[in-house]
Image (cartoon, rainbow, N blue to C red):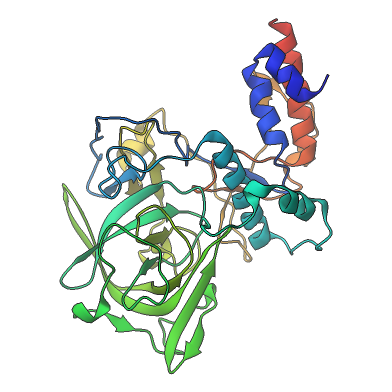
Length: 374
């Protein structure tokens, strides 16, 4: 009896999940801290959650009724699409961590044979669903940005746009801002981590994701974040003005990078801590908080784990995994299995991806647990 047949006969949730994960076998352990994609049926009401303090900003699902850009009218991806996009996202992360595999590898062959994973005419950046609303320029122009802990530079589409995807709000126009300034080549603002190039003394950038990309020039601008408690301003803020973008991200204008590299929002604003609470349902909102408050430290439900640092640290947030359990029982594997590969947390990944050895152990234990409750 195949694992798929067993899943259908037992209807066991442990096996159901492991079968879906079994199709996705990367060589690195990639985990998501919270849901990054919600399956959103049509909803009517938006139940906004109050942000906790002045260092917080509202986070909204671009598919739900709380979205001001789509107003719940854009269909969310189904579970199959979520899994396929999650696999491609995992492959993108691996490409940033490991050297590319040779073209004849089993993994590459699997991607070629899987139609849903092939890059089509409408590529995607990640499974990113949640966005924030901030302002750029003087006077302020509103931009909506996906949150991504796996990206560094913040970028938004700008005028004049040579090739851009559709967005719900007007394109950012740097000519209408008194604080906009292109970054000249070899200036102090020419950060090396996103591999800029030079053209006519203007710094250019280019970033590629699982599929899709953004290209344009690097600029400095006034970034304004407003909430019910007050206003935060960062000036100058280095960002990418995208004029050649090949990704449709359902109405938002760009992306805010929250990675560990110098060009990310976290590094530019010297944040040592940040946390995010994604919405638990499509009909609610969440928030992202910058900094660590006394309430976080005293709250017994808030747990902390160290982020691994090293002289050659990646842009991702690496954590130390020491074990896994299924229904309270530890996987029967050596502790060294958890340390053979890096473990990264990623806001743009929906599923938890495991190395093959952990998949096998997890599946076997899951089947055993399910048989015991039949």
